[in-house]
Length: 151
Image (tube, rainbow, N blue to C red; front, side, top):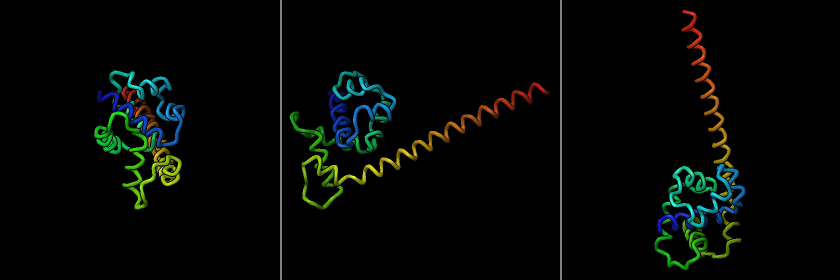
């Protein structure tokens, strides 16, 4: 039951992000089939790493996921989770009346895209720095081995 709710919750986050499954696949390095299987609860035990990659790719955080899961648990089974999350986001981030039109919500949350782009930039930089550090570690190891053989 919790796996079904998790899949529905992350699927709603993906819908609110405005991205395609293909974009999520590219950003997370998970296959489109794996993502769809997760969304429709066909994965029995989704990995934490895979779920966290998907959540980050939607522009949300794991803290957001926990909040959304709490909301989803309280909803009737036939409720539209995406609309309910959109209402929650509007009520949390805006003093305007709650709007249920998804297009209007996406306009109001346009700043989230900028935030996502900044996060992506920092993630790419972090990945680049990690590769440089790994390369330096290898170089140091090679230098150490070479100096040991000279003794």
